[in-house]
Length: 398
Image (cartoon, rainbow, N blue to C red):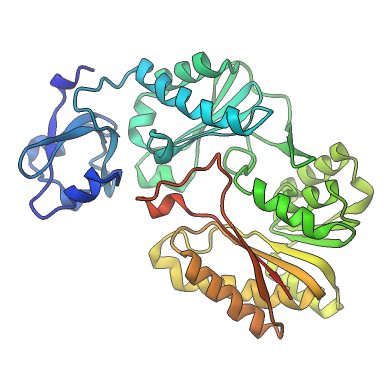
């Protein structure tokens, strides 16, 4: 659509125009001058954003049904948001990933930080999974998929329309094949010397979490010649990386039987099945039982789901992280290592570190913090947007 034909929305006086000029990508619904015309804009439509003095600030994607009323797409108010524009953003993202990784297995597009707000694209060789988590991406999903295929050459594209972010945008859930054919089964993904099995059609998120790659590698260093407990293991994330790099054994704990089955397939593909075992159950229950059994491991890693996905959930979430640390700390052998992770953006690093330290102390142990990790460089962080720095990974020597 030609920028000159777009509707105009304007910021209220005293709104955060300066923050937006300095790179903050969102405009909240209470910051917009609303009238009948503004409210009539369709979810996912494009508009030109003006400051309170009617100075144009750029082209935004609008969703009147969301608390995030507008997302900045391009600071050039004359930008035309079409397939060519989308291809340019994807090409810029691809150039960065190709510099980082020898094989095409990575997060290709990380939403706002790659200039495509609300859009996640994970790449698995010649297959890619798109998560259109904002209304504008749902509206432009066909040109987005076409641009993705043109730029990368992937032959299969899956649209994964599931998750909390879509419900906040008022979008329905659906998973469809947009290009090519659905894979017959899970896809093998090489990472840190291990092989993971990704269920791109029915697994969590896009089927695999690429964000923990550098933290898997660090844990693998600590685990050489030792035993590993991998709690909330999903498809074997930390455990398989540790075994592939010299750990003697790994026990994977998860509540999901399908995830553990994929982890077992990954252990076979990695050639470490004899050293790999699983235990299905509630993680808190299993940690408690392992403590009662007197079990000890050289390295224990806990990588739970987001206990604090929003500010409202922050305090109970922090208590849950503290409880994980309290139950896990006694399972670490003297001089061993405890890795604790959080993917809750509402729990910042300081709060998560404090909760973890309290839990270790209440578990009767003393810890040295030796490593603080975040998501890998295929998950870049936008400094102006705290939510983009969601992943924290802490390793303590006990």
